[in-house]
Amino acid sequence: VTLGTHLDWHKDAVMQAVIALASTLPEWVFHFTDGHHCAAESQRQDNVYRVSWVNYDDWLTHYDAVIHHGGAGIMWHCLQKNIPALVYPVDYDQFDHAARLAWSGKGVWIKDGLKGLEKARPLLMALVDSRDSESRQ
Image (cartoon, rainbow, N blue to C red; front, side):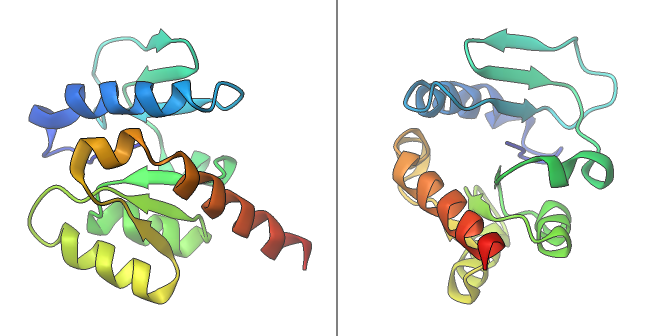
């Protein structure tokens, strides 16, 4: 889960929503990145780890899906590496990116704000299931 670097004001609230989502998928592991090399050490709550930094080039392909804000950087990395995305747009062009990813079948737009993120279990399951079925073909 990533929100880029300019949404620091919103990260704690999103972290709480991710914890709520993760509680519905206890067998899964979630990583929430603050997007800063020098942030505090990692924190853990049940199956959610909050880490300072995830190097997209090195680690993105290790994830089954990415939840992101629709920023151009993370969107490009997911598209390049064919990683499915749940998109939680917050501001600016992120809503347009979410709509385009949904239209093209490259992502799913989480609507209804934080409540939508908390209840995104079926969306996330469908996204990962569709990726698994593509890889078996």
